[in-house]
Image 1 (cartoon, rainbow, N blue to C red):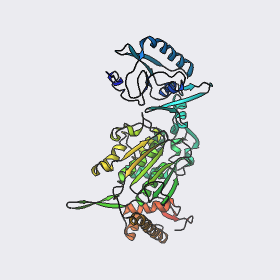
Image 2: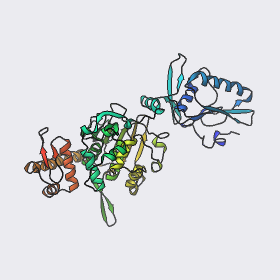
Image 3: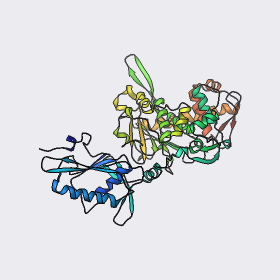
Image 4: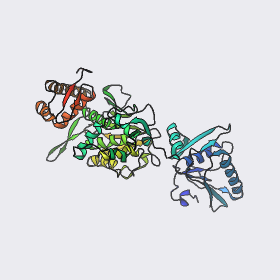
Length: 476
C-alpha cells in the first residue's frame, strides 16, 4: 500500500517553502540537493526528506544504507556549507525495512549562508515555495544586514532638519487630525524622523517638501487596451517628491483618468466610481509604506487598463512565501519600513493594526467575487490589481477610445478655467472657485493639485491669509 509523507508529517503535503523531497541523493550533482541547505538557512528553515518522491510518496532508503547516507550528508554540510548552520537529522521507519532520512535545517542568525561549488567559489541560495534559487541582489542585501539590525529608514543622513521644511506633511497632519497645530519636534523624534541632535534619518528625508531622494518617485500611465503591449497611451505622468505628495499625485491621476457609472437597482440606480476612493488611498499608502527603497532605478508604477488598475511597488513580500499564498483578509501586519509607517500613522493615513487589505476588500465586497482585488508578489515586486467597477464586457470599440480622450479634453478646459480665475484674483478661496466653476470642493482641490504639480502655481502663506503665485514654467 502506498504511504504518503503527509501520513507522518501532517503539514508536509507538497513541496513548499519548508519542505523538499528527494528519492535519493544524486552524488554526481551535489548542487541539486545540497543548495537546499543554504536556501533553508537563509529563509525560514525547512526539512529535506530523502526517500520521498516529488509527489509525496514514501519510497524509503534501505536500512542497511542509512548510516552511510547520514555520514555522507554530515560531511557535505560541514565541507560545502559556510558559515556553519544548525541542523538535526531524524528518521521515519517504514514497513518494508526502509526508512526516510529527514534533515531539518534551522534559520541562520549568521547570514548569508553560502554553498561552496566544486571550483571553491561561493553561491548564496534562497528558499521560495517549492524551489531553491540563487539569491537576488535585494535578498543578498537583506541577508547581509540581518544580523546587524539594519533598517533602511532608520539610517541617519548627513542632512540637518533645520535646512528643510515639512509643509506638505503638516498640512496632512492638520487635515486628518482636525487641528491647526503642526507636528511637534518631540513627535518627529519619537517617530524616528529626526535624531536627538537634529539630523534627518532616511525616513525623515522622505517627508521633506524638497525631497532629494530621487528613488521616491511614481510613474502613472493610462492605457487604451488591456495590456502594456497596446502602445496607445492616453496619459503618461511621472512625479518625484515626498511620500505624502506621491500618494496625492497617484490618487489624483487615477481619479482624473477613470470613469463613473451606475448600477441598476429595483428602485432606481446607484452611481459608482470605477475604483472606490478608499481602496485607492489604502493601496497607495501601502505601496509607499512597504516598498523597498534600496532597489535603485525603480519607482511605484500605476497602470490603468481598460478593465483594471494595477499598482506595482518594488520589493518582495516580506512574510513567508508570496502574497498569493494567503487570504488577503487574513494577512498579518509586518513592516519593512517601521519609521515610514510610524509617520503615516502619525498623520492618520495608516492604522497600526495593519488593516489596509481589509479596507480594500471591504470597498469591493458588495460587488461580488468577480471584482475581488488580486495581489501577486515575486522576489522583485508586489502588485495589487483593482477591478474597474464600470467596465462592461464587449463594449463598442469606439467608446473606450473616444471617451478617455474627450474626458481629458474636458478636464484640461476646466483646469484652465480654474487657472484663469486665479490669475484674475490670486487671493481667491476654494469655495469661491467652486461657485464660479460649478464644481465641488473636492474637484477644485484636484484641479489645484494638477496646477501646483505641473509647475503653474504655488501657494504663498497660509490657507486663510495667503495667495496663489502664478509661475511661468509651463503655459496652459
